[in-house]
Image 1 (tube, helix red, strand yellow):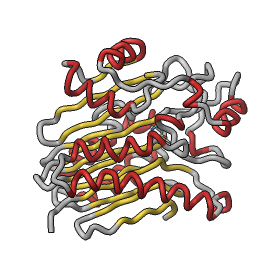
Image 2: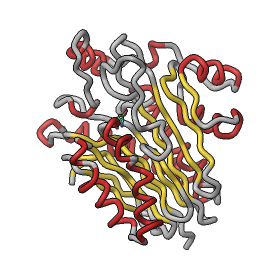
Image 3: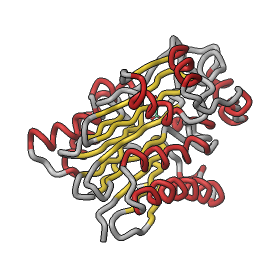
Image 4: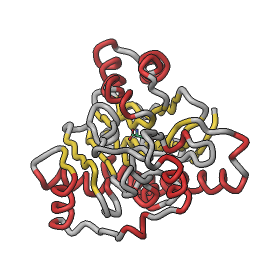
Length: 308
Ligand code: ASP
């Protein structure tokens, strides 16, 4: 059997079990499985890990359930500013966008940045101009409007409160991401987000920052993070998992445990991450009550989960 593997997440945070009706839970799990299936189809046809993570993340960006792409939260000005990044483990190539508006699939724009811009990270109006040049599909503001997220923002608008999407007791959906291992032994990671509700000053989180929210290196692992972005930046969380494996020789699960349960908590780093090593081991770990997540390994079985 080919050693291919894929994992996805749809955010982590304070997810109260009481709020999760069977209908809601089913909707999330179906969306996660759709993302897995889309990415897995790429891998099982011999495609590259980079294409698989993009394919999986696009499904989650297109779902209004998650805080990325279509379902992105509102910033302090009542607009949507999205961040995304991806990285290829074989040559450490990476691309990212920050604070982009009206782009249907920010992860695809991040891939174009990697392939066609000569840069790693571009932002704001410049990124929009680049998207236009690359003929990346755009959508008007209405496409990104979601009544629940609007109410979520209304409750915080005009205050200094900046909320992690899933810290709202009613609505806890989050940033999305994927990690993949292809049959050639290459790894890739991608992350996409609308950031935090009511964010201002063009705040940028960990998701578009290589090493913080996203990292992939064929020598060790691929990682995509979700949680309180400021803490993940300070912890250089995704790269730290790689570093613990590369420099200390730790196994993936132990490296992830140290980052998620020892390094992030003192920095108020609520959240979690998904990680995959170059042998196909998958670790999905978080230090809060839940993380929307899914995985498919060498056995081809699809698994999704929300709570511990
Ligand atoms: N990490 C994201 C950010 O800080 C938020 C999230 O994971 O939901 O922008």
